[in-house]
Length: 92
Image (cartoon, rainbow, N blue to C red):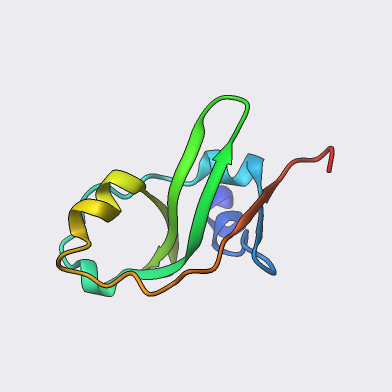
């Protein structure tokens, strides 16, 4: 429950901490993709994973949508956000 509160506000000024990005759940399936609000693109090679996709909001929750899902849905949904979200670590 506490992580959910932290993750809701984890994107600040177009930046997100890598620790928070690792905790964000991946959105693979949705009843109505038109309710998904895109926040921005992420292209980051982390310590444990490669994140290439988009951060989105759905019902006040933050999710990550991978690039393959975005491509599959692009014929049905116009992903209008083109801004990039920068991922930073504690060392930066």
